Amino acid sequence: MNILRIVYDWPNPWQGLAPHPYEITVSQLKQGHKVVLFCGQWPKSGGPVILKGLEIYPIDREPLPNTIFFTSSIKLFFQYLKYRKKYRPDVIHSHGHFAIWIYAYRSFLKKHFPWSKELKIPLVVHFHNTAKGRWLSFQKEGKPIKLMSKLLGWPMAVYSDKKAVEAASAMIFVSEENRREAIEYYGANPNKCFLVETGVNTELFTPVGEEEKEKSRKDIGLDRLDKVILNHGVITERKNIHLLIDALALLSEEYKLILSGSPDPSYLEKLNEQMKLKKVEHRVIKTGYTPYPHVPIAYQIADVFVLPSSWEGLPKAVMQGLACGIPCLVSGFKVQEEIRGLYYLRNLDPQTIADQIKEITSQPRDVDVQMIRSKYSWNQKISAIDAIYEFAIKNYI
Image (tube, rainbow, N blue to C red; front, side, top):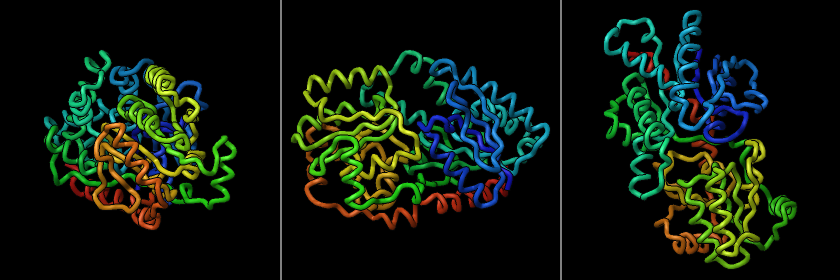
């Protein structure tokens, strides 16, 4: 099958959504699919990661936050039209708002020219969250929203979602909550909505023995008796890292916190001030940006992964932790089935977070690594995605 993938986040660098479409693409190429990729390109990143058999069309990313809708996405739209004059993929698989004007274009054709040849190529839209759901979550919690986001970023993201729903032959959601939000807020057709939860590379993310764990801890100055809390991912306000720092201050000295990921500079400044105020700077290790292939090390030395987020789709970071045999304490989402080793925060109060961390680390916890391997490997997820492609091809209007 010839697949045209459209996604903004593609490595380099390895951050945000990038590992998800990368792993899907790797698995599809291995299974014999042909994949053409339109992606965003970071300046001075060394260019996009190349895969054998993958044809890439990189487009420079937005020059300023929240301007993707009137910069990079417009350039993508015209490059897409140029590409389509020569080539006809079997299916278009788009992730996120990069394709906003392609959604609007196809929505217009669907309404006024349903016989258009363009519409004979099915469009599958992959929702990793819903903009409306995120927005309402921020408002409910009273979190500050930057002026540009409030006036431009959020409204355009909601518009993009709506047009994607109108244009899509099929939609993929990473959580049941996201699926429900698209139906409720955007009027998505439930018959075209499919749940495919985030997968994990079970060859890269694996448990390690105590000897290797102790050695890796020693390399970064941790003692084998330390109780190590890990938070991995982009460090932003909605992840509520400040609550995790408050919780750390309520825990005894042997508890250490690793923050692994690229931070929002202004939020990091607040966190640093908070660490000083709480007198826990010496108990926090900030690793900064970590390339995806090196991420497993952080999990393999941790005792518990904690994500006190306001909202999530289904975070790849959680599946990665479970695949490494690390219990995960999370909020902002729920998976469909019960997974041994996955715990949900009762609320986002620092004392509750601290208490649940103590409960989990008070004794060895069993994590169902075998279930993660059998149900959440990327090979399993690609089979589900292939079935959705077939549905979209048969029901392209």
